[in-house]
Image 1: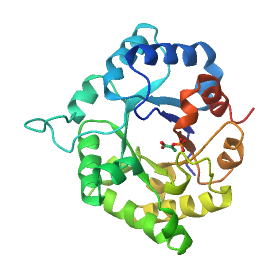
Image 2: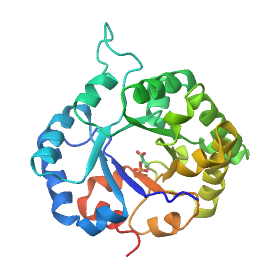
Image 3: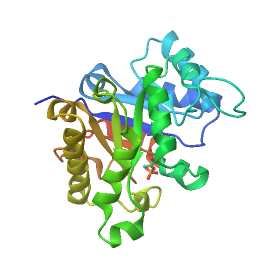
Image 4: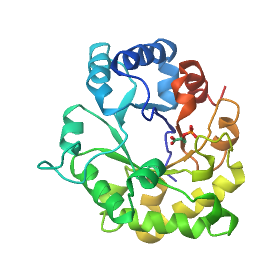
Length: 257
Ligand code: PEP
């Protein structure tokens, strides 16, 4: 069975300008030790306007922290005002890019074909997609959370070849738990994450499914992360609000302590 290194990624959303970003990454870098980086992959996902500053800091100080973007365009270049391409993110040495975050789905109408095109664009440019999936409250209350989430996995990965899949990350983020303080119970989260891994085995093969990292996201904090991480199919957390507090995020990285 594959050993998957946990990935703790901080989604800053539309917070912290480029100067604040530098100060925040410096705080993280000061606190994190080689022991932390050996146990966990740590990443920050700042707004686009911060990425160059974060890159300069990471390169200049040879930091082991990784970084990425919160979205990308499905297109490579051209008349797409306001968009940022995968090539541009790759040029900034981004490792990760979140795709299909529920806030993109909700406020920008992103659906499975859009998510799928963006996943393909990310893979093409050597970025690791963090594909976000998860159900709204009404879907969970109707008991359709597993089917709904698996349909998002199917749609998001359609036509993505196995070589592009083993590296990617799927973030299971029940929409009702994002930014609300309501955490999904660890067994409920495991139910869906286990089903996602099962679906990856059907779509690809067991070996590929065992390599993919599946994160949980939704009101993760230092106080609840250990229980979530104890689940067999949860390989990390996508952390929103709590990632803006450097001390709290470091505690999340040290979930085993
Ligand atoms: C997120 O933005 O992906 C997220 C999970 O947010 P929060 O941790 O604030 O719920």
